[in-house]
Each structure stands twice: as structure tokens, then as C-alpha cells.
Image 1 (tube, one colour):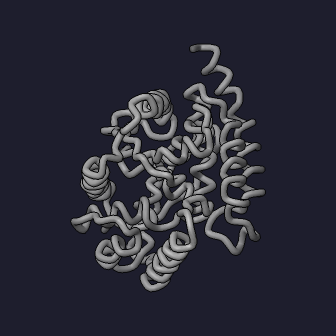
Image 2: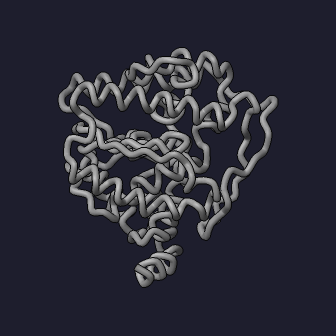
Length: 299
């Protein structure tokens, strides 16, 4: 999800001290939840959710049979409709027709490129909405349920290539089933579903919906998940004819907007340090440049 993409880099900020305190408390609550639940290895099976692509994402994943892809998609669809209904009621859904059309047009170009990693992905029931909010935020739920917050585009003055970089990254989390992988790692999946709404601050009802929302939007991805989504994201963007180097300029903008975004050595963080992330993105963007040039020549 794009929200996770921004929050994990310290991007989601609220104006004023009160907002900072709320975010800090929410982060501590999420960390406490994860620590309390612990990690389960028993019963997990080794799977490979995606093809490797040019970027070579080949890590075997451990998935619990207790958390099925179908159930998580069902929960995601329920949670997404609840969020959409809430934002529509508040008058925040797709307020700017031109901006909504712009985002949906970019997604239409990105979706066919997902077939490189998953043959079934272009046929997912994709949905896209733009939420009016000052937050630097966006996310993609399992099954292709997308939300982009207007503040992400407007405050950072994103180009189409940079929007494609954000969405490509978040699509990759969904393709790779990182949410299901996180749910599989947690002991007491029922407990996770029951308390996650308190952690995220979003009113989402139903156990499957809360679990899907929580592992997509509310809880942080691991550094490994972030790196995989970064690398897959630049390939998806390149294959769709968007400049993959825009992922670097996107993160530079985010860094300026947040005073550095994260900082500290890699081993102290759940996400790559800004310097290492930019270097990795630059390297993999260069690797997929031939795909971008081919896509551009065919348009």
C-alpha cells in the first residue's frame, strides 16, 4: 500500500505537535502488538508467489495454510468498500475529477505490466480512488484495491513518472502477497484481526476485513519486503513506459519534505536507510532502462 510506503519512511506527518504525538503512539502500539504476538514458524509452507522478473526477486516465502490468499482478498474487498464509503460520506472521495482521471490512467498502463510477475494479476478486480487528504499517503490492498491521497501528489508536485513509481511499488506488495506473509508470521491471527483497528485508527468491521486492512495499511512491512517492492516496482513502471529513474527523484522529494525520512543505520530500522534505498533504486532503475526504452519506442 502506498500508505505503508510513505509511513515506513516516516513520511506520513500531521501538522502540529498533537499530530506527531498521535503518530508516535500509533507506531508504538503497532510495535507492541507485533512484539506481543511473536513469530510462528510451525505449519508454514515455502511458496513462491511471483516470477523473478529482470530484477531477480527469488526469495522463498513462508506462508501459513491458516491464512489463505482467497480469504485475505475477500477481507481486503470488504475493508476497501468500508473505507471508500467512509470517505465518500465525508466528501473526500474523488473530489478532483482531473486528478482522479490522471491517477486511473497511470494505473491502467501499469496493470498489464504486472503479468511479468503474476499471470493472473491483470485480471484482478482493480479499483482506484483518490482520497482528499493532506497526508503523504497511498496503499494497495490484496486483489488490487488502490487508494491514493491527494496530498502525496499535490504537496510533492509529483510527475506522472513519480506517481507510477509510488503505485508500482505498492502494486508489488500486493503481487508478492507481503500482507499474507506478515499475517502468516504472526501468532494468533484472530488476535491480530481483533485489535488492529485500534492500532490503525480506522473503523473497519469484520475479522477478515480488519486483518486485511491491518496487514496492508496499519502495520509496517519488513526491510526485505520494502527492497523487493522497490525492485519490482521499477520494473513494472519501466515496462509500462514510465521512467524508472523517477523512483529516485520521488524519494529525494520525500526526504526533503520530511527532513531526511527515517535516517539511522540500516540495522536499527525496519526499512532501508534513505542513502541505501536511493543507491539500490538507482542501480535497479538502470538495470531496467532497456525495458523502458523498448516500451517508449512502441508507444
